Each structure stands twice: as C-alpha cells, then as structure tokens.
Length: 539
Image 1 (spheres, rainbow, N blue to C red):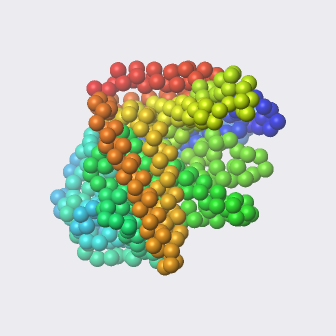
Image 2 (spheres, rainbow, N blue to C red):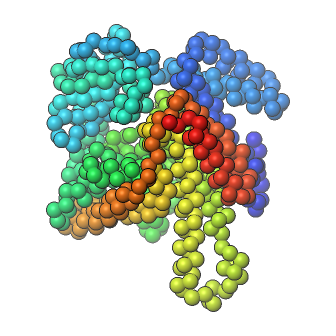
Image 3 (tube, rainbow, N blue to C red):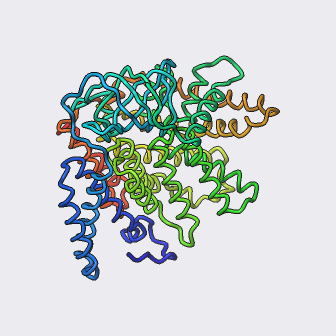
C-alpha cells in the first residue's frame, strides 16, 4: 500500500493514513484467527489446507485489489488459528482429575507470597500422560524457584470450573486448566539458567532496597517496591482495594506507562549529555529489556517493551512510522511469539486501550482542547502569566479527559466480562494519578542508579523517601476518592462471548471513524455502543 506524500499537511487521521499502517492487515487477521481457534477449535488440517489455498490464490490474484484483500484476510485468519492451535497447550476443560499427584513441572513464573510461607506461579506439565503440556496454577511451600526450572512437585489437584470467577477466572485467562494447591517440591529435574537465577536474586535485592526509607513507613516502602517491580501482591490490602475500586490498579503493573516513563527519562538524560542518538537508543532498549527480565518478564512488560522497540525503530528511520503502524507491528509480533496472548485479558485491554487513545482520545483532545480564536489572536506579551497558565491547564484537563474517557469506554466490555466490575471513576482519578505516578517512577529509577556507590547511599535513601511520600499521597487520594458512592459498575455478562464481541465492534468503530472531525461523534458513538451492550447483556 502506497505511502502518502510526506509533505502533505492534511489531518493525520485522514483515510489515507491507513496506507502508513499495512501491519493492520497482518495483526487483525492473526488476532481473529487466534480468537476463532480459542472459541471453536476447528480442525487444524482443514486450517492448513485453507490457509495454503488462500495464500496460493493470493499470489496469482495480487492485481485484483478487493479480491486480494479478502484472500489476505482469509489466509491470515487460517494461519493464525493453526499457529494458535499448534503452540497452545491443550485447552479442553477437565471435568475431574485425581485429587493428589506428583508432577514434573517447568516453572513459567513464580512470586513469593506476602506472608512469606511459599510461592504462587504458573507452570507447564512435562509428564507424558493426560495432563501433558497443560498449564497449571501453582501454590507451593518453600522458596520460589527461578523461571525455567523443572521441578518434581506433589500436591492436591483440582480442575478449574468451566465458568470460573474471581482468582480462578484470572488463572484461566492465563491458559491454565488445572490448579495445584498445598504443593511441595520433591526435587529439581532441571536447574534454571544462570541468567534466570541472577534475575531472581536481583529482584529480591531490589525489593529490599526499595523498601529502605529514612523513616519507618512499611506501607510507603511496599508501594514503591510494587511500583518499580510491578507486583501488586506487595500492596497493602486497603490500598489495593481502593486502587482497584477507582480503576487505577494498572499503575502498579509494568506496562506501557512504566516503559514510556523510563525511556523518556533516559532519553532526556542522554540528550543533556549529548550522546549519539542511535547507539544510545539501542542501549536504552537493552537496559529496558534487562529491567523487564529482572522484574519477572510479565506478559504486560514484554508487550510494552516490544511496542517500545517498534516505536523507536519507526521514529529513527528515514521516514517516521505512525504510532498506529508501530502498534500493529507490536501486536503481530506478540501473537507470532506467543499466540496464547490473544486470550489474555491484559493483552486485549492494553492494545484496545492504546488503539482507542490513538484513534479516538488524541484526535478528540486536539479538537476539544484546541486554542480558542481569542487565544490564537492575542499576542503573547499581552497575556498575563496567570491567564496563560490557566489556558494551559484548561487544555491539559480537557485533553486528559478525552484520553481517559476513550480508554475507559474501550475497556469497559472486557473488564465487565473478565472481572465483573468496571470503575467509571477511573476517568477522573487517572487525570490526577497518572501524571503523579511518573514522579515515584523516575525517583525510584534514580535511586537504583545511585545505590551501587556506597558514598551515595544516604542520598539514594532520601530519594526513596521522596518517592514514598508521593505514593502515600496517591494512596490517600485514592482511598478518599473510593468513598464516592456507586463508583463501580458491577454485573455478570451473559453470554460471556458478547464482551469480546463488543470489543471487536469497538475496534471496527474506531477504524471507521478515523476521518471524523467531530469530537462528540468520536466519543459518543463508541459510548452509545457500550451503553447498548450493557443494557442488553449485563445483569
């Protein structure tokens, strides 16, 4: 698809802009194919035949534009479904399993409990048998192992219910069909790599350091450790409940907000030091990758890092790549690497929210928060400082509301489906908390940079204290905001498949309305669609 003229000064959301995002023709069919296989589990042989036939016909019919697009979509869906089925562990629900078993398990993730009496995580069964390659949730006594270790574990098995709720719903969304409780490690079948062990030790050391403050404030230290390491399990229960009620718990998951904030701070420092752009960019991406690995390489952090790579590559090329293209490339790369991510609520929520911000929030903010005629015509010297700052505050507030509202509208069908609740209060709470969250993030990063030098440790401890004070203020604000009545919309989605279906309709709505110049239509049509879905399918 041809690029538009780089000198063209028309609105960046014009229809031709989609010529800048050909990766959409890869990402969307791949996602549709993975979702189809997750829902219907078609025969893989038929998928391979149909995908091969569509690809072959596409090769000979490339000159027929409309027909070739249909063939491209068909081939992408078939190959995506086949790849999803080949890579994903068996997903058929189990009606029953033996109550006690000894299993060989390759550990995918392991995090210590807050109580310190064991660890929880996910793993893949490596024993040949009825549970082979199934993903299971683990609750085991003893110290947590490093990622990649293969252990012999005994414990009580239980099959996840078909219509799981609460914690069971979350582990089911991660691809688990079985859970093992009261586990005990019997032995190590295969040791983890040295790098995985180093990452685990580094994470433990970082948690202890981030909890070190100039005064006794265990909650503040826990908040800082949770912010920097992306572990919501470290949060005090009261703070965790209030952040969840206000729809701002995402601030403590390592995602695009963390990676973007860290990247911006490192780029700012590199520019002040006049370092070369491209080598510095590669070094920053390497540091961010190391940070992702040390903090556990959660799916959300890996997605954010992949997105950062494509955005950086697009911006440093000879011709800048639009964010929509970078988003589509990141989604396609994630699905090719890990097709089971298509059923992960975090994957769906993060990419849908970013798509809504790009195609709805930002253009609506540009229209609503644009300077008025009097602001544009008044000379800068004739405007008092307090009025100029008032104009900036108005534009920032209106723009932030548009972005927050777009992300909230996009995420509502999925949060109601997977978590039976959605907080409309997040539209307003995020206006305050998202900018504030960058302060402890940057301070925590500065503290980690200073801590290797013993002479700077006292200064680094006070940096931790400043970050903890900001987090305490955020927690206080969130707990006060959570007292507002009817802040959370709760309900059960029946049938559950309508939630992802509504999200797919929102994606189509965002793409169709990309040319719209009306902020009311940009935000109003998706909001009306979600409201109609709530009336029809939420009980």
